[in-house]
Length: 446
Image (tube, rainbow, N blue to C red; front, side):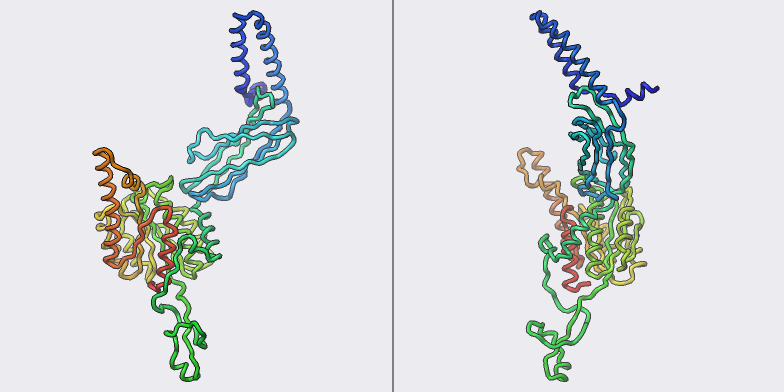
């Protein structure tokens, strides 16, 4: 049993087999050149001697390699996340290490390995990136390090029981990026538009003396007459408006784009949108629905609101059933009593799909300002833009143009009933949603 433990981490390196092949070739050549026969015999002894020497060098002593995997508290979905491995070499020679980390099964990577050369008695770190495509728990297995000497004939495996679980949350890295842009007032550089104000749907704050540049329409004539100098009304933007992000988690949101489903794009956008709404002094809330309404967070403006929304988004689970818009309408009618801005993340591929749900969307729009957000099918662009050379390609192109045109018809149909809509690509979802939210606030439509 003790002998088994010694040889369990023992691995013969490819270099040993290359030497064996070279000796065989040397024996074949010696058939024609007899002088090489003794050289071939001597080569066997030399290779075997080096093999046992290398075995002694690598296997004498214990804990000659120490390694540790350092993980973040949580992964950000759809973003690159750094995983750090620290390795310490206690050998008195340059150790060449092949690192095989047992990364979570969700990545479906079967040939993951990293190579590192460690000088004697030194500690070094190596960082690699993982990009998760779905929320949930990611379980890491053991960390394996195969170390060999410069001879490279024998390797010893060092296994570190570094099992760990890292939860993958909605894209909080994207959230931090937009929060930083919001603080620095540079959102417009990323596509956020400055909108001209229409009217004065703002709360009265105070009466002040007129200064050059004030809007003449805000002059308070009664106060001007009393003080005998121009006085103007000063307003402040209306705040603490309820903003609800409602995510359709039915089968229409299962479509993948760059590895992420439309549902996860909507979840990431909801996280950012909720943060922006709270920064703008509004109340942020959310819910998701398919066969029933779940993951409800009532719109509030409190310090723990973002944490509650993040946890609710992390726990969004679905079997991609058919979505029940009638149940959504009933829930909104019963629980959202104040006029709110409702950002509805869903997807419609055809006019028939819209017409089935349009009565419920119109009913919601009677009491709330609803923005229907759905997605362009970017996979159709290649079919539309490519030159058709065969009859089949012509058919495919015509069908693709029909579906793309139907998306635009859906926008016009919603506009006919005074319902706002956003037709966007998944990668521009967050920016376009923020654009529309800021436009609505600027125009005082809520």
